[in-house]
Amino acid sequence: MPVETLVRYLKPELRHATTPPDIGDRESRRANTIKRPVLVHDARPRLEAGDLALETHGFALENHTSAVANFHDKAEVEATYYPEMHALMRRVTGANAVYTTQHVVRTEDTSNFNLSYARFVHCDYSLSDPRDAAEKLLKERGDDPDRYRDFAWYNTWQPVEREVRQNPLAVIDATTLDESDVVDYYYTGYGKKSLTSMPVENAAHRFFYFSRMQPDELLIIKQLDTRDELASCCPHTSFEDPDVPENVPGRRSIEVRLLCAFE
Image (cartoon, rainbow, N blue to C red; front, side):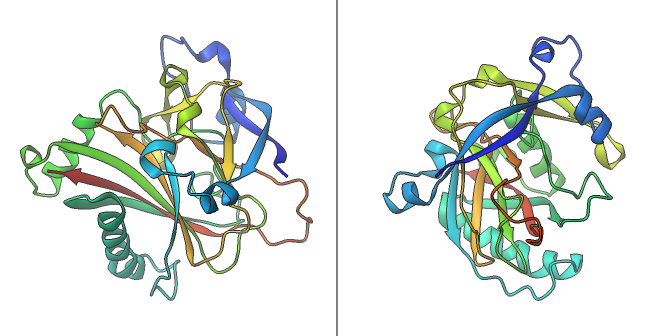
């Protein structure tokens, strides 16, 4: 049965705002978003039926057992988990090169807005100029952007320490997303303004999640793509499952942002 829950969308009156709104703490999130009821469907039956494709629907599930012992150790994650993700993304996407920009470990601790669950439907990048962002990163890493024909940005998202019961991640099936509904906003966390994007509500949106995700399962989410014929982005959000008992521990997870380059 689908989960009946509430998610936060960008307020509809901000769709055509002359200046993108700022979101970087609970107060600005509350001021610029609106809670709306949605149904979140379990994607596992679709997975079993072979009815999910990363480049069509914008998300996919993979199996991955990491060699990382402590995901709270930044150095260990960068030394071990990053190469694991690079190899995985090369295998899944066929990319010729993969670069990591950052990772975030999220827990039930709500004291830090940047590290707590992201409780509003959002994308991690603006859709306005995917090629420019990719070329800038490649130059910073000493690579030649002219070597590559196309670029795509992805997130990997994986539970750590225990299965996910409360605060799982929901995604919008990209085949139900109209890009004109995706609006720029500024994320102002981490002490800087970053142009990203989020959708306004559309009744056509279909939300999915993978129930009871395990630490050896990994979700891949499309974020941005220069290839017009493929899914461009997959908006996502944490959500509360009202059927999960209150004493169930909160979700712990790691997400990694990656750029894939294709020759």
